[in-house]
Image (tube, one colour):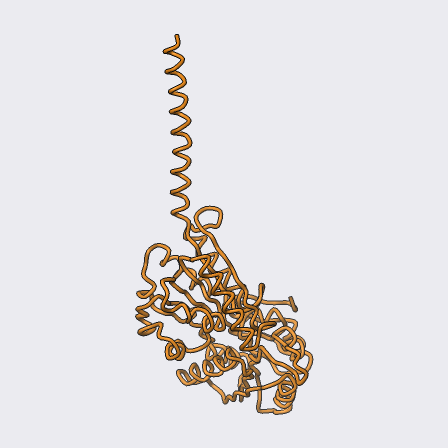
Length: 359
């Protein structure tokens, strides 16, 4: 009898041992399969440029079977360099904090959104073992490469960094407006003096020089909030100017107060009678007229597919740097009505999004 009891207890102990051992093995296997992605934003949470890119990256990961509740850990950091930390000193402080968090998290892939994050953080990690995918880069990759070598060429990066360059699709945008406004004479671009503003200035010139646009054009670099007012009002008094392209997105007044896209566009809509081309489809939701605009969500998704490839074992150095492939055709009907513009039905039918007012 005692022998039977002893045998029974031994079997019970073995069952308990194998039960917990299997749990440990499964837990260990699950941990080994968990990937770590760090998403570094140049701007604040919910920013009209950064957030759609973030959402696109997440969607690409999700479609490939990577989820936070299953096999993925994501950490996000917002540098807030447009609204708040917008001086060189404050940006460097944010870069230092971001680097600390990235090194502690030890990601399998670092995703860098927009230029400030790439310039102040990602470039400093160019010689590290962390694969990096950028999105929303306005500066020319070749110019960044002169500051710190991170690629052999766009088609063959050869190092640990790849990503998606933010093509503005300026020529497509102007062609759309030339169909809307036959006899389009001149388009006026407005940019600011921030690092991103200087990059956009060069982007506009590069894109127009590659493919001619069907009208005259000029770029005005505005150094302050007051100068922006002056230039917009001057453009409105110039009959030759048919359309404006406002991409001055960071301005300060003489007292040092900072103005970003929401305040700049609100003033523009109240004081300008010229139709605006929107850089970003979200800017159309903020009240600008619209046209062919950068699709930030699609650009983030495009970068997210690169992240997926790296997580699946591909070397980032073999993944070519790409231009943002997709633009969105978007119009704000309320702004069109304010300007007395009737958008032809065939163009409205072709639009990716039609906005009724300001969101």
